[in-house]
Image (cartoon, rainbow, N blue to C red; front, side, top):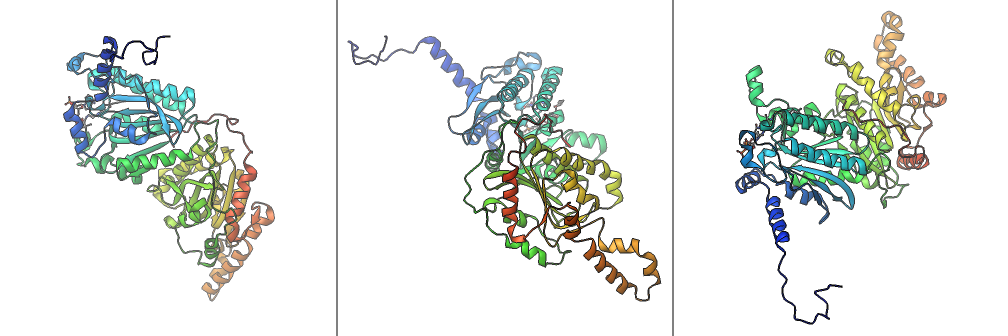
Length: 531
Ligand code: HXC
């Protein structure tokens, strides 16, 4: 056997000459790995942005990245592109690992033709999307692009269409995450919008269908990039963005944490981790909640922290539709999704945006085998002409649809108020909640006591000498009769009125029992359509 390093080699070792074809290969690869023009790279860094390769370095486990298509380049020669052919065509694609688990990735390189998307660029992205789909691993896209490559005309648009088609095909099959790390303009915004989670970085990420110049020309409105399509605009107003990061590094940290809660695909469960937090840890804050004035607002986060393993809650969409809170926790080591009314905003009422926000999250959880914990403190639907004309009926219906179709384990705890249609919507028993608990301070009824007595006893109140005294008496009677958990428990619509201090234990025990309710992959495939 030919073995140049063998001790049996008769002649002293001579340094071997590198074969010319290997030398040529190394030169080609080295040049290709350089990316864009050094000036462009400098400009990128000056904006506080990493290069595409730096980003993959920060995101993926060390030495785990395997690139695909490094030498792919555009075949288009029009409008001066002939002299600008760059290997890789402005996007890096391949697979790697995050905390030891496989993912597929693409990272657009703004230093090469502004990260613009031509046909070869699009086909590289499509290839890695197919790889993710066929191998059932999450897909993460790092976007930093001027949009459709103008020189390549309709080929670029067709490239986008191929990506959008695959985004929809992957929807509900593998988790898809988009990270906006620069511009994302024109129709390009629709790929992230089709994915499950969108991250943006303060100051450097922008998304818009038409930029400030076009807006000015079309409507006369003068608006800055940030105001129109910056991270906070999309995190708090449009709801396009789920997670805002202070920097790219912060963004990758958050992204890795999110990935830790997700299964690789719809046939798997999320990872179970060791849980150092006692399952029987008591929850005294819940007892305190039963003492306070039921009209007093509070942030439901405190309740979630109290229930969750190690008091940790990974919130999603924190700046959008704040009257409902959604995110991930662990319970006894297993991942659960939380959907909770938040009395600190709009008294926790359901409105258009909160219905959309919760419904889409529930659909994600159901697609990816993640049980749902629902915490209810809802006075009803937010009233108003804006809400009615904006379609609260249409949007509110999405929440009913999402909870009804969800077949993952569902545990509901009514903390305080649960009134009317909003009671039904929040994973009530007859919407197929598996275990529905209520605290002793729960008020469950068709409507609040004040409104109810005005309708039921209008004539008596009109005839009474001391109207307020009568109102108060009737309200109290109504409250005792209907707006308590016991009436509902007597009909079985609440399974149990529970000790407030035992809520963590009760919920964990319920989910452990429900663990095998549905085998991953047994459910019919439903896409996570943007709602
Ligand atoms: C080709 C592009 C490009 C594009 C940028 N570049 N966008 N090349 N097609 N869409 C090139 C620039 O010519 C420049 O090349 C380099 O990228 C960097 O761009 P700059 O403008 O110098 O950078 P900056 O000042 O940071 O501005 C970034 C930008 C701006 C805001 C993104 O480039 C811009 O407005 N681009 C167009 C954005 C846009 O309207 N896109 C929508 C296209 S239509 P050199 O050679 O100088 O380095 C679309 C429809 C898709 O996307 C529909 C899908 C369904």
